[in-house]
Amino acid sequence: MLRLLNRLWTSSPARRVPAPRLRLEELESRRLLSVSAVNDAAGHPELFHIGSDNQVYVQTADDRGNFSAPTLTAGGQVKALTVGKDGQGRPEVFALGLDNQAYRATTDGSGHWSGYGLASSGQVKELEVGDDSNGRPEVFAIGLDDQVYTARSDGNDNWSGYSLSASGQVKSL
Image 1 (cartoon, one colour):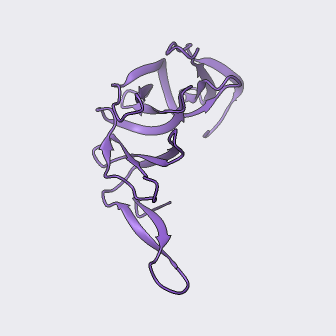
Image 2 (image 1 turned 180 degrees about the horizontal axis):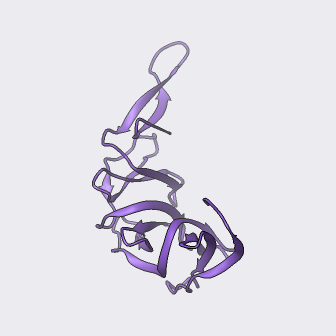
Image 3 (image 1 turned 180 degrees about the vertical axis):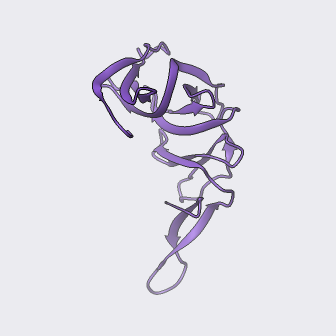
């Protein structure tokens, strides 16, 4: 997958004989502000992106690599997104809200998304998500003081507050 001219493209074999060549196919014609990808529980790629309306959309690939039309995840405008997985392997969207706080939306695995809920209170500049040693989501964020903070999930939808990861200023995650 490639982000070119703020649009999303993928390569697929051209249907030519004898030697297939790759050609670019446009997945999303609207201007995109941010893109993140994970594999779903079946191993299919899922692309998450912020559309020109500043809301998060998802496109899922089938067994043949064909992507669905963009579907709105949770309603609400955001500045940035990153995607992780919950303990069941389902995607979770972590988004930087217009108020500079980290929000989280989850799916039940059948395409239904929760609304955004605050992951941890406090304003941040940037965020990323990873997993802790127990496979639970962990949010890494740059605070307004340019230091890295973490917020952790206990696996039951309870989140810790932000704690300083290590002192020292950074420019990006």
